[in-house]
Image 1: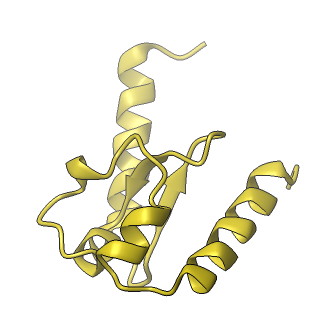
Image 2 (image 1 turned 90 degrees about the vertical axis):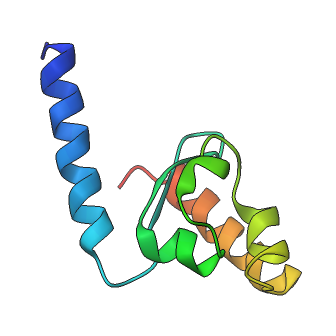
Length: 88
């Protein structure tokens, strides 16, 4: 097993890569709670930093802050759940 520091370093490395991607990227845990997102995602929501949305499902914030329709957000949620349930 890797040490805690090695795991934290690896997580920080991958989060840095995600932050540099030009698309909107967010990472969910198995409960659909947000564990990380890139700057483009929280900028879309009009937030200065992601701390206000980490640890909770992002879908209500997509509706209230990004003004996406409930139907559009439901499609995102459906796709997210399918991705989480897939073994790929």
